[in-house]
Length: 240
Length: 240
Image (tube, rainbow over all chains, first blue to last red; front, top):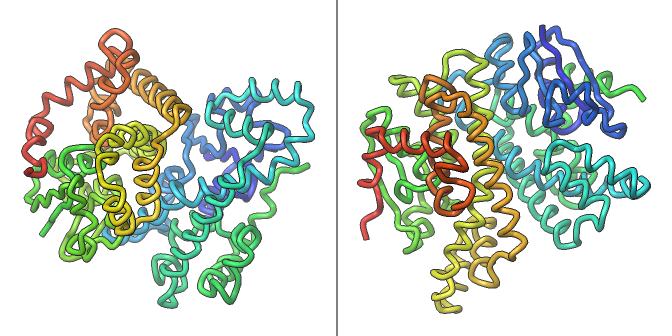
């Protein structure tokens, strides 16, 4: 039995959600409400002591890391395959997913966390101190301490935008030959991974990510949105 | 034909070097001298325009990213296998290699780059400006600009040490049940990836990484050093 704990169809939680939907897999969807800090509650920490999301539970075993989860899902649910069969192309696909994890995601996280400052600043200081003390993962705790305190500096925000500009350029280069998907004619885990972050680009990078400045990216985002599995994503948002 | 461009048996360059040696693979070793900035020379940039090392060249195709290179090598040179055959264990192995790329390596890079300040500060400012202008990769250029300018702050260095402390704790936990290798009884790409960084720990984290404070890590480092492939690594240093 497969169960996915997630925050809904957004960011790293979208990665395994979309993969499961593309596979047509039977799974239990267990949406946590991040704004209610449900991922730091004892119930979830009994499953993942780090309190990080998403995690896949398969026959009582717990797997973290959305990119690794998707390669595992492609191993155990091989139909349809979402990695190229050729070892070289598979390696190139992994370079693309690795770029999202190591470069795109950290840059977008700065802007995303900055956007949460309005939410965090409304929380009573003593309540927030308790929240921080309850966060099991040290890096997450430090991020929220920054957000609820001074926030990110203008220099940090500008640097995040610079890096996101490079992400758009990389997408434009990768898709520049008119290919429908990042690896060419075949839809892969690379499309899924990039789509976990890329829908934010037209909103947060208005000048750099639009149909004129980034036509290939814009067309790819539209193609992604037309996929039935992508259209099914909104149903997996946490109920509020 | 396989060729590996690398900086010698250190850090990310060690990762594919050690894998090739464990496989007993025939390959051309092309060591670049980083202190002579050979990776920014036109000859190498014709191979990798980013000027980053290591890269694997296989039948004229170029692959970056040491972790991806090793999975590719394990695909095309399956004997001996260096990934578990069980999908779940393979996923757990990938969580371990991912941690090195996303957490261990960036922390160690801060201290390593800080250690290069003595070297960089001896370079004439105008020569260094030319060097910086010649660096194709923007993030690498920014790192060297920091090193040759003010260096990292005490707070940045302390935070890197905090994170390296977590890396030692993770190694101790992983090896805590007495297993010889990170994944248990079988030596895998996870041991290779961690060994690309871990030999620096007893030197840069003297109090936290020694036989008393980190016995499992110390014993694993000694086991690694006894492997014939590890003993063969020094021969691959760039000649000076």
